[in-house]
Image (tube, rainbow over all chains, first blue to last red; front, side):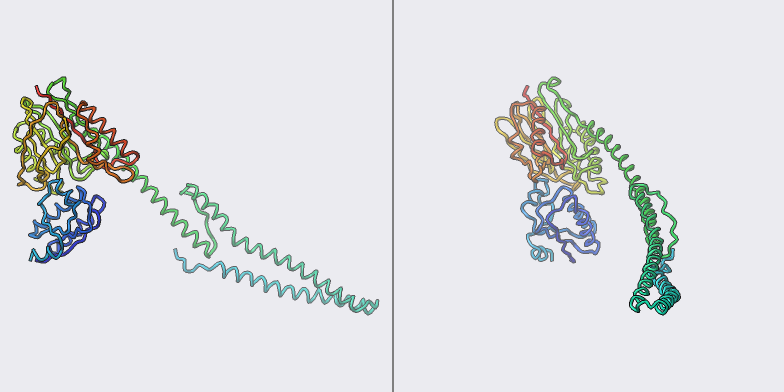
Length: 102
Length: 389
């Protein structure tokens, strides 16, 4: 399966959500699954969660996938508290992710 | 307008001055030749006739020539000043007109320019700038008018939203309950919601938070709230209520807004609470101690239409207060970017105050903490006290 990596910055919130969403959708448009490198990210707002939800659904509608890599403890906490525990496909490293999906 | 044919002030000045200088030199030479000749001859005759010393004669000649030269220099200076003044005069009138524009009169007319050099170029650039500025001011005026209209509409929308929320259910109407709710949107309208009502001896209540802020969240808030009212008015089972609302929220959810939601049903004769946590902050139970209501957090509404929701049961202790809130409370930020947090929240929960007092005190604590910083998220609280009959 073709994949492309998109690297997130420190935060994903209402200020930068649009460019992140556009970036991931661009990858999906090319027919590649998106691997989201979140190693640098330590905060995701509800708007950010919405972007992840939206891009995951978009990927599914095209028969593609969205993978989250390197989710920090803080972000995992935010996701768990909001009930997203186990909803996304997550991996610890990019290598592990690419290995597993082949 | 074609600007390429314009001359340069430098060139025109240089050519005019050189013309006058040449003219001056030629004229001076001629005058001094003839006049000087006359005087020299006169002096030579005097020397021959009167025997005036040669040197004195030469002195007189020099004196005559010096006087002549100075007079013509004065004339030359006069003409040079006139040339420069004539070139600069248009600039002076132009500056006066520019001053008028600078003081706010964008419609001021610039004087007609007849010079064919940089001054013409300046005039052209300036009048282009003047027109462009007038156009931008007009656009700004229209944008401000539209903004004013929008703000007016949002004010009305806020009133509508706040009137959708029940405020209080005093224990005078039903001695088993004391309820108070409060919602302060961060902007004119917000995405937080809560509701409660009593039907057939049961209290149905909910609290929720639509992802995002502002008008889009407010729209989803309104539909979710009305769905809860409708669904909980004829379904008793909490699982059915939340599953149904979730399915409705997922339908036509093209923008994938999700809603964190906590819903509960309290049987007023037994004190048994059935509840479901759909991605929302777990409420606190305040009695002898302050504990968080145990629950497995499920997915929020609007994420997946086949989510299985888990329902929990809890026996409400007599006179215990259930305190529900949204993350606008714990994530309220002060000027130093510190969050209010769960610790401050639990520190401010008291077991022996009425529900409205509890919420007012908590609101006060948040305002003191936040200080001058602006409110970043909707602040929503719902307090329910159950008194066993």
